[in-house]
Image (cartoon, rainbow, N blue to C red; front, side, top):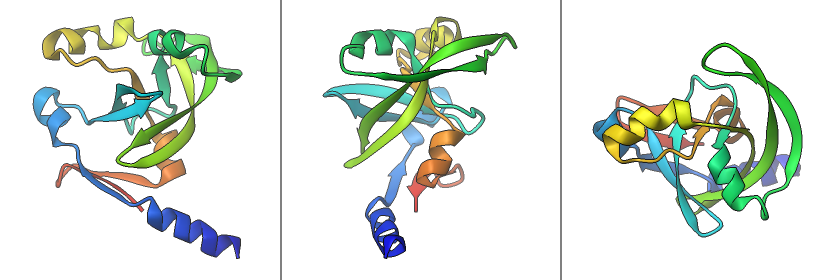
Amino acid sequence: MPTNQNNQSRMQQNIDTPISFGLRKIGLPLIVVNVYQQNLCFLLDTGSNKNLLDQKVYDYFKEKIKAVGSGEMFGLDGNKFVTTIIKLSFNFENHSYTTNFNIFDSKDSFTTIEKKSDIQIHGILGNEFFIENEWIIDFEKLTLYSK
């Protein structure tokens, strides 16, 4: 019985949405999600093992978000650091998702992108999220799918 419910739930979660805007504008797959009635821009990054949320976004929503733990990560520079882990819910394409995010300071990571494109990136959805939700990026069709 749980299998049927699980399959029905997944069938209701199907997504088929274009990701061409971000790819054409700045060469990156971006989506806009809604968190607590605010639009945030997330980078879809299959090269990232973790989901990441910018420290500034965490600070802004801190009263509404509860930390669920801490963990260690390696930065782009190769240095290991301790990070806060939170559970965050967001809406995308009329579907709700909840997943863990590691908090990180993106000022060194996204500054160049933001200056060149005027697009502010608030977080990264990585492989952790793609696997949990069976998301697939089709770069040939510039489309995001979920099963």
